[in-house]
Length: 196
Image 1 (cartoon, rainbow, N blue to C red):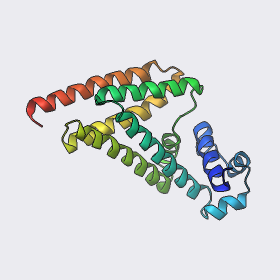
Image 2: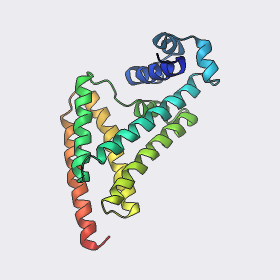
Image 3: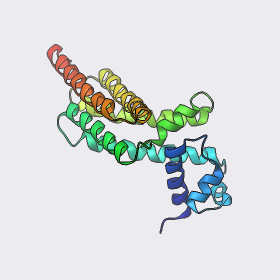
């Protein structure tokens, strides 16, 4: 049986994916988690804000591990990135376009209004860029170029989710993955030609 703390984190994650940060009340969270308001404040004295930081960090770490695992499934990093986008498109389609990532949802809502939550989302995104950059370095890119390309991939994922959810169509999301494959292959080839 899942403990109260884990139920609250899981319920909050799901609610943020469906309703966003501003659309989710503490009452929504406690109802979905079958928990009391006192439990929330017991585990997170700062209430919803502290809980949100934990949800972002926990979800961010899980998605970072998933991103790394998918990239490491294929020796061809461009093909691995395209596969990551195809898998994301499949998730969007099977969940009726519920946002698969609460980090991007929350970040878009709070980036200009809540510096603490913005900083937490920034830390998550930065961690994902680190994961991608390390993989691109292993594929042969110099560190600065690897980090830039990883940032492009992360931005494309988040922007692609918004586009797909808005249009309720994954064609563009899948196309982004294919075009990133082309970009990655071209970047690696150019780097190899000039000797890094």
